[in-house]
Image (cartoon, rainbow, N blue to C red; front, side):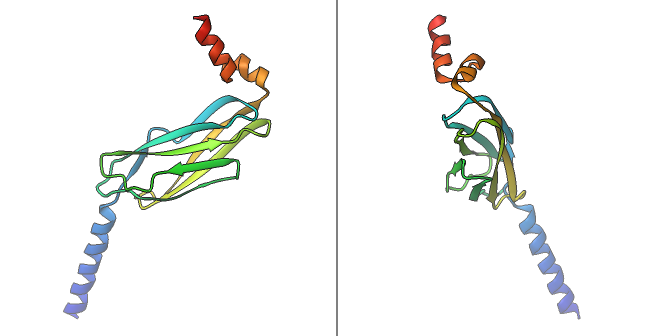
Length: 144
């Protein structure tokens, strides 16, 4: 009986220690608002996170909510105290408001994290007046 109890305590301690030593993903922000985006022009945002835990973080996968969004990430471990990134590109093909998600799966303590991209796809003229189209940005640079 003492052996069984001792084995149970040892197993419990091992599990407790393994849970305590995890990487922790802390994102600067988990939602990015593109504002008005020109139709037909893909837009990209890079989400940055810091590993505030004690173990390296390895991103296993990043899945977008639809085929119009493509996430990319590094396969190398992010060591404790270091930063990593997940890039998400949205193909602004359909007009109107959008909210897309990217679900990041890793070995971090918080496991799955959902990142959000949102904005509104508009015609080129409207994007230029909003100051988000490339032509509008070029005009701003030359007028200064």
